[in-house]
Image: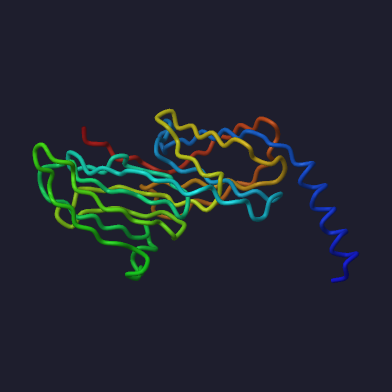
Length: 218
């Protein structure tokens, strides 16, 4: 490619980037019965920005408390450090591996194993940190207590958000133009197909699913 061609290509990219204004995309995710679906992860892939800048890593805490992982579902940027803490008075194990069918053939390098002693009265809970370098959903479990489940969606894009109790995910600062929206939920059996959309200044989308959410223990 000549210098002139490179300059022309760069100018074209700048014009395209300047034309793509920031918009807000609101996605309402529904369960199979039509009710709002909480803890679904909505991921947007922009056709305007082919390689968006990954969000900065963060430090997050995931607690083991009352035989549960809290929060049950976390969305964290790739490279983040997750601190697992055992708030219960008995020992817990933490097993992390790719969620869904991908976990069946996962290697040791794709997951992690921790062991956390129980919390003693008057002392800080035991904890351990894990750096999440692999994008995608992880399932958390405990070898000692098989009913314990949690999930971490490790995102390599700035447009990945978890729905709240109302089933709504808000994605700000999305470039206008062609895009695709994918929905992931811990209870889905197969990957849901992406939905093609055109992003305008305010984009509203309803995403029905076949997911039947589990009833949470209190």
